[in-house]
Amino acid sequence: MIKVNKKIEYGVLALLYLNSKEDKAASVREMASNCGVPEALLSKVMQSIKNVGYVSAVYGNHGGYKLTKTLEEINLLGITLALDGPIQVADCLKPGNDTCPAKQACTIVDPMNVLNQKIIELFQTTSLQQLSAQKELSVKEVTLL
Amino acid sequence: MIKVNKKIEYGVLALLYLNSKEDKAASVREMASNCGVPEALLSKVMQSIKNVGYVSAVYGNHGGYKLTKTLEEINLLGITLALDGPIQVADCLKPGNDTCPAKQACTIVDPMNVLNQKIIELFQTTSLQQLSAQKELSVKEVTLL
DNA sequence: AACAGTAGGACTAATTTAGTCCAGCTAGAC
DNA sequence: GTCTAGCTGGACTAAATTAGTCCTACTGTT
Ligand code: FES
Ligand code: FES
Image 1 (cartoon, each protein chain N blue to C red):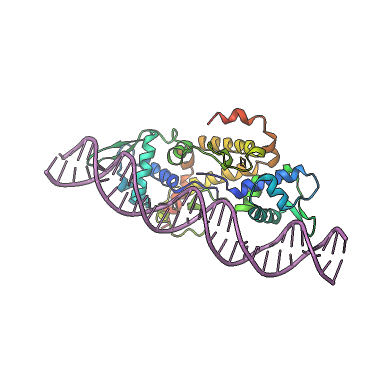
Image 2: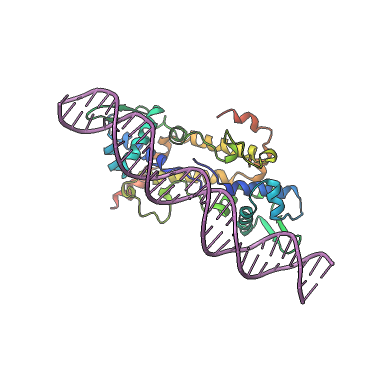
């Protein structure tokens, strides 16, 4: 199944929660219990998100994480890169891929590259703002498939 | 990692190969060895692709599979549906998902639906023709060896 | 009847993803 | 200064998914 993993799901959930706190910091514990996700895992997720600069950490007592960007500035590509590494939509595309038996005559490396590029663009142009703005609409869209 | 699975990779490879055979049927054995993919697995893949009508099977001696559509008519959504079921880009979206602890307060079901829709559209508008249009590049690479 | 092929269920192996545990470090509150 | 709530991050285990195999039955051509 082509899907975004839990870490990304949790990351989005947490960032949205953080946004609702305005400028206040929220601890992982707080976020985890509010969002209903495993604390230890969210902890890792937040660390990675911190490393790409979407949030900053406040150490010590009453510390936690704070948003350092607006929802408009945060896009899915950044979150994905932080939590899941570079996007490679097909195994063909993997950098060190010397083991593929079909490699020599492979007709799909390039096609897959095209698809890969399209997905990267889609993720890049999908900001958190854009996602969270759609709430009313989506109920209709659901019935499409 | 957000990626298309091997079955889809193999399916695309096989359909492209089939296309190069014009109207002649190719057996799974032939396709597998030409594309360098596991025969038993490709057999399953072709069965599923047959079930959505992109190819027809010719039974008996000298049988195999034949394309019944043009590359323009075959899109990634169809292939994905055939080999991997409906696209659900996040676990939130799964039909029978009653177990998610965050469900009640979930702020991302709708956002994820929007993303899901976008991916479906991308897959639907990506025909095999469109993908393979980039081929000239790879032909060069192949002839290098 | 022999053969070369598809159909598909049941299974195992490999890989990836999800989640846990723990020991260390940081800074604010007292 | 020292307690304490909280971040950091490596190592690990468990669960789920994906990849791949095997085997038996069926189909149609020669
Ligand atoms: S390189 Fe392996 S399928 Fe393309
Ligand atoms: S329903 Fe579980 S995260 Fe949305």
